[in-house]
Amino acid sequence: MKAVLMASSGRLTAGEARWHTAAQVLTWVRAHPGGTRAELTQDLRLNSGLATEITARLRAMRLLEETPAPRATGQRGRPTTVLGAHPEGPVLLAVDLRTAEWRSAVVTLDGQLTEAASVRHGSRSPGAVLAAIRGRVDAVLRAYGNRVRGVSLAVAGTVHEGRLVQSATLGWRDVDLGSVSGAVPLLLGNDATLAGVAEARTGASVGASTALHLMVVVGVGGTVTVDGRPATGSHGAAGEYGHQPYGDRKLICPCGARGCWDLEVDGRALARHLGVAEPRDPAEFLRGNLGAGPAVGKVAGALGGGVGALVNVHDPATVTLGGLAPLLRRAAPDAFERAYLDGLMAFHKGRPPAVVDAVHGDDGPLQGAAVLGLDEITSEAALAAWATLPLPQ
Image (cartoon, one colour):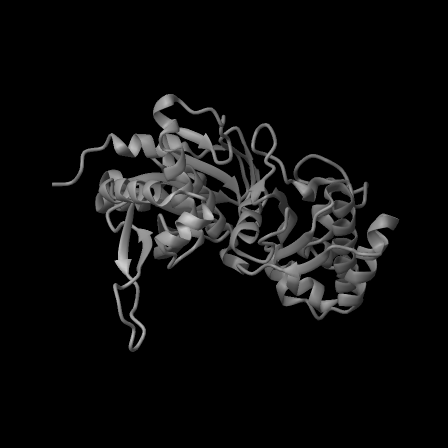
């Protein structure tokens, strides 16, 4: 079974609707580590009887547990209990497929990433990489059985209707990723999109009604989030900001378009400005040459100007920068800031949105895959399916 990560009809069957409040409870527990039932009751505006009934049902279904809170010195009376993920509850495998490696972690219902692993590509061929990831999925299935409710995969490339259409960093085109998950549902998302989700939900743009996230590695990608949810388009392929025509129209991008912003903001652009051959690894070239004076200023300016243009498009409250973008801005802050402000419409210039570094850094795509994967496996439909499974003996 395959699914594009952010696709959901929003319509519930009668059987699923009874899980609506339960889904809200699990979402609250994830967002409030160490929270108590009294706090849950107040925040979700439940009456105490309903809160008691729902938490008891979730405990019985191995979705929730209540444990005593640490006692303060000299504390008297009945100990307070805190809510958390059940140790035998559903889990998710989050995977971040990168240029040189792939990373993975088992994610519990409270959002904790455990059993983290990182594997460098022995070969960058799709068959070899996907087989290696499938091996990790199979190992997790052997360890957790039917507790594994999904595989959430972040990938550096354009995702369209459940396929990786193109990845300049991996050199892949039109690759079916479905084989990595076997019979487990596969949830796909672009790495920059998922990094933006991580910032909106647990990072630098928490609380922003609308936030723009941009990530520079090889080219630039990103997403706009509204109330913590990404705008992904009708086929899951939105956020390809690097292919906006903010660059030199004489240059043809590997995507097939002319003048793409991608070609102005990474190591390929820096190499052109320095008059050297295009690097084999643009990201490493950029990282290793951030002291290259005026040439770096030109690249930082191209980044800042594009950020300004996208602020005009989306009107975000906050802009977060990930990948190599923070390093590039710090290497030439004046060039970035001047181009950013010059790119803004007049009414934005008085109070331009803050541009801040991403909190999650390199972990953003994996964190985002975990966040939206958990949204999926704690949905009403997923909880209804979990309730049909036999309890362990």
